[in-house]
Length: 297
Image 1 (cartoon, rainbow, N blue to C red):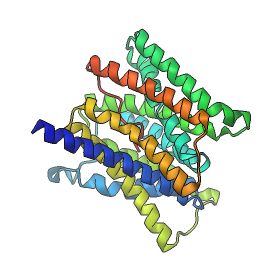
Image 2 (cartoon, one colour; image 1 turned 45 degrees about the vertical axis):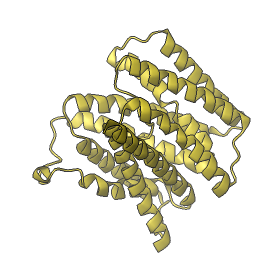
Image 3 (cartoon, one colour; image 1 turned 90 degrees about the vertical axis):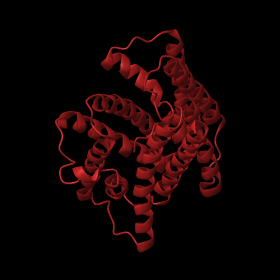
């Protein structure tokens, strides 16, 4: 039974990674639409799968909470992170954005020190240092050419670190997953809607509307599959599968957008993956909550 659960959990993780990767592709394909408009679509249509999680006896007042401020912080930081990663996807290679996004656990470690008072030993400090070197290797050529879009995936990872801390706090006070996801989606929709007056929005064609709907559905379902994966299987077995997103990013980038990863990207990505793996193994040894796939979108 456990073996079957681990296999099913692994399948859920692979599908989650694939759906996130497909969402990234669609975000690049719909680049004629304003980032705020795409973000609004991701949030609004992403609400659909969330409603299926709400218990029937809670449907009338599921939105009630005693922790409004915590939800606001989590949602606002998450919305900023989503906007940043969308901008990065529009202007950088898929492999570059995916590689930089893997540095999320590094920032989680740092934020855990600052906000949770956790003590970090030498092994995780080494991992953090390796990750920073990887980020610098990937982004330095861009900064040399004044391509400051490399800062956006880094902003996303900072947001992810903050989101991870707030989600941990919300979970500790007993807030259900569907409520956390609901407020995040609503806040992200409002965030995207605020860009409307700046004139970048346009009426999508029927075909593009389908793509925008798919962005919302894929992102939301990917998050649900990620959660289900960790419910079904041992974290130590499913978490390494998240690195398939880099493989998908390279394949999709090459065949769909003629993107060829540079040596800087491959070397930097290797260091970030090693860093993330060290942090994961250490957290698993300490039996701490594992830092999951750095998306939360």
